[in-house]
Length: 191
Image 1: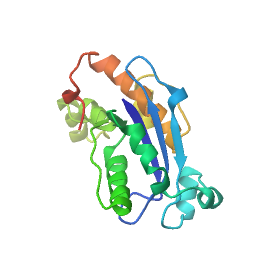
Image 2: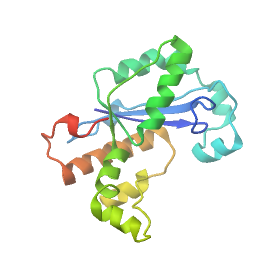
Image 3: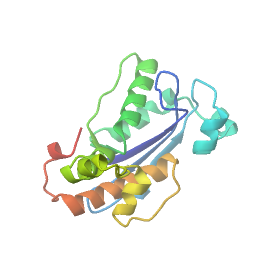
Image 4: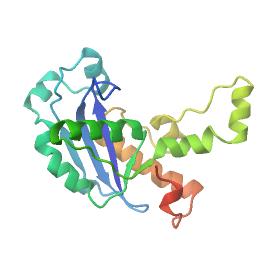
């Protein structure tokens, strides 16, 4: 498996762009940080002050960074043969598809295990969770830091693509250890 996270200039793939990508290969027993990958890429649109505040990637870093097209072959090669693991597939899958399509004229579709979807299944969809909402109680947070806290995982700095990829890999390991068996078919957890 390969955990992936991206930082973007916003949440709309039509108006915003990728500014960094982190990849961390792992399996259910081991995270291979020595094989991690991290890129800062120059977006086709200027950074806003809000996005700089959010992910701490500066104008200077962007000016010196390559366009995504320059690292795309390397990225796709790193992804090849892996089931990708993300926390909220609508960012990574959607943004990468739009970026590849803009640069290569053809999009990309890849299998994804979404740790946020797994958390929603476990903590927002069961009958007891719906009853709590009906009683006016807020739903359980399925954000990455809150999900990690449920499993006793340490807090990490948020909004750094490589750190969030590591955090996502650890979260899936914890989810499987607590709620699934190591031999659970992938079809039960992927989107």
